[in-house]
Image 1: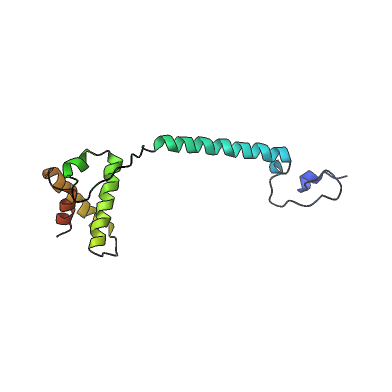
Image 2: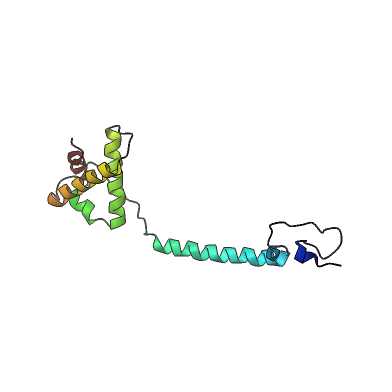
Amino acid sequence: MPCHRARGYAGEGGDDQQPHAGVPQVIRRPWHRLVLAASWLAVSAVVTAGSALAQPSLTPRLIHLDKITCAEMLALPRDTNDRLLVFFNGFISGSRQRMVWDERVEGEMIERAVDHCKANPTATVLSAFQRAAGR
């Protein structure tokens, strides 16, 4: 009897000899599938744990857009500060009903707002963005 595994057949003999085109031989046996599944679970657990450790702890906070000062915004952790700047950019664009995002124009507006905040720490972030947007 020819070696069916070499030809891509699943069974050792009998009527279950169906070709498994494209299926690696390693996953044709039940215990190989179990080992493969356990390996994928282990890899995904390591990746998930690693990414969870790399992500900052998000503390829910409530920020009043018309009250947060530039000094308060500049004192925030970098990732929170970045998210807040992106939010203010979208808030101002939405209030102006802008439907196009131009990376250069929006980036320059954010830079103007941040520069104004650094020079005027008691100003509100909203007023800095309004000024930067030309209001």
